[in-house]
Amino acid sequence: MSRPLRYVGWGLSRIWLIVILAVLWQVLARAAKNPYFPPPSEIFPIVRDLWFSGPATHFFLTSTALDDFTPSLAHIFAGWIAAAVVGVVLGVAIGRSRVVSELLDPVLQFGRAVPPPTLIPFFIVVFKITDTMFIVLIAFGVIWPVLLNTIDGARTVDSVQLDTARVFRVTGWQRLWQVILPAAAPKIFAGLRVSLSLALILMVISELVGSTAGIGDHLVNAQRGFQLPEMWAGIVLLGILGLLLNGLFVLVELRVLAWHRGARRLAG
Amino acid sequence: MTKARFVRGVIGIAAAIAAIELASRTGLVDKVALPPASTVLARAVGQLGDSDFLHSMASTLEAWFGGLLIAIAIAVPLGLALGSIRWLGTASRVVVEFLRPIPSVALIPLAIVVFASTTNVKMSLIVYAATWPILINTLYALADVDPLAKDTLRSFGFGRLAVLWRVTLPFAAPFVTTGIRISAAIGLIVVVSAELFSGGGGLGTYLSQTQSGGGRPDLLLAGALWAGLIGLAVNAGLVWTERKVFAWHAARTEGAA
Image (cartoon, rainbow over all chains, first blue to last red; front, side):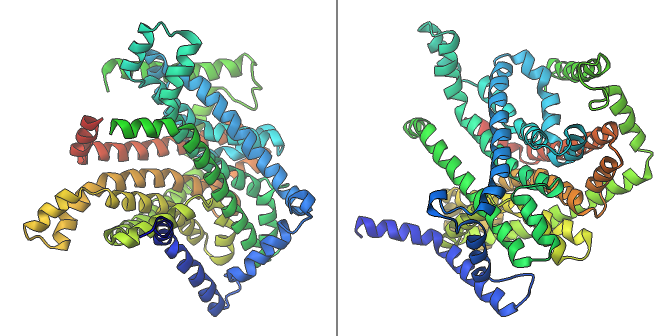
């Protein structure tokens, strides 16, 4: 078989089920005529009209899209990036000392175990419904996977690598940047990925509960107004957002950790 | 766990409690916003005598465990069936990877519109959210089963079901348990979220009602404390199960690493 043909075969063997399921969704929803479950042919035009039919100068985003996306994306990225920075810095600091990481382990395990939505009422009381509340909630809720994974990664650096660094007198910042962080990177990235999907969940639920603006607020209004196709459009939009965030993260991870996979392949 | 490690853990917990207590009592942070740790702990103990709180907690736990059990009953057989057929397994892994990043809480408004009973709202959301991690772990485990072990059994004349029972299931079980552990954590997040938004009873509703009455940070934190302790206990129970029941698995993976 020629090479391009093989690629087509590889792709088809993977996506055929998605295509069948999508067609099934359309056919079944159409036949059922249930107002709660509109067919995708009804939902997707609404997604386009509501958010993606703007002028080309605005990247085809409508003004509704700018109103809905801006607060939501600002909250999720501000919260996630804050959690990532604080989590990695603290995690490396804690993870380099066995005593400190053992002292803090139960406290941090507890922090991770608290379901973040239970803190939404508390944060609303403390910060009222402000941008600060959304960002602090997301940052506090998603820091645990990053923090615990970074501690684990920084603690379990290969002793041969550390000894080699010592022999070559690699110390201080250089040791941190060139030995410890790269060794911990796969675990850090695994933690960052978990926190990104958690951040999306928290963004949505906090906007559903404390709705003033954002995609979640749009969803609530559609539900309260019983506009079912528009509510479905909101769900589909959040699904697309989830897929995009996950896809972007995988791309970044593939680039940053390319050396890791290469090294593993050599070792294997 | 060594004794030194246990002692350090206890010291760490005591230090954390003391730090919060001090920060609040000295006025380093607003005392109303962050009450002293001793107040929160006292409130948490007091909630054990509050029938309203206990009913809420029971309702949350019921939906959580019930939804989790249904998700296991759906995802494990489905994963085994799809994963046993090679071409179907490959395509279903792509479908699951495609559906998994969709945030389950976005479905809360839909579930409320579709289901009249709040228990059904909660259960359906947990089932949806908890199915993916279990399903994907089962599918990936099945794709990784040692073909040599399967072929060996087959060459001795064992049938498909015997191979499934003696090779595939023991190999997949630890991965399935890990999936259940991830699902349990997500399930608790989803059930509390649904209760916060829909107000249909449970811990989330208890918390949002406590908040709307002008706000009682001490009670809100005490409620979150219980949720964290329960989450911790369930997670520890599942980790313990993994270690005890699948000791052979842990021994092998640690030996390989």
